[in-house]
Image (cartoon, rainbow, N blue to C red):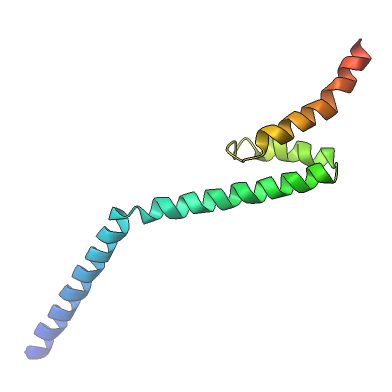
Length: 99
């Protein structure tokens, strides 16, 4: 008779501790901080890749980053720099030909 009571008490205490940990986890906004750190890491990775493509003057790769990936990471630190470099590389020859 004492074993089920002890087992019930252990289960109740374990569930209470888990509930407290979950509440603490939510209270400190840990899920948001994890998501923010993940997004920052992805933006930093995209910026490094874009910088490498820009330094290598790989305009086709830079175009791919600008068109297909930066729409998801518009907050990437070097987005506007690389977008401008790509525009300057792509469009002035077209304007010259049109003129």
